Image 1 (cartoon, rainbow, N blue to C red):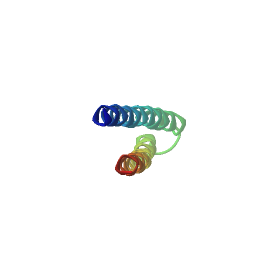
Image 2 (image 1 turned 180 degrees about the vertical axis):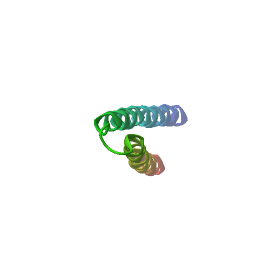
Image 3 (image 1 turned 60 degrees about the vertical axis):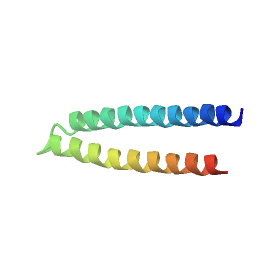
Length: 77
C-alpha cells in the first residue's frame, strides 16, 4: 500500500515537473520571439532574441533543478 501511494506521489511530482518545464519553455520562446520583433530597429535583432532565449533557458534550467531537488527532498522524508 505504501509503495502504491509513493508511486502515485512520484508520478504527480513528475507530471508537475513536466508541466512546469513545458510552460516555462513556451514563455521563453514567446519572450524571445517578442524581443526579436521589438528589436527590429536594432543592428542585430536575432542576437537580441538569442540572448533572451539563452538567458530564459538558463533561468528555466535553474527553476527545474530547484523543483527537482525539492521533490527529491520531499520523497526522502
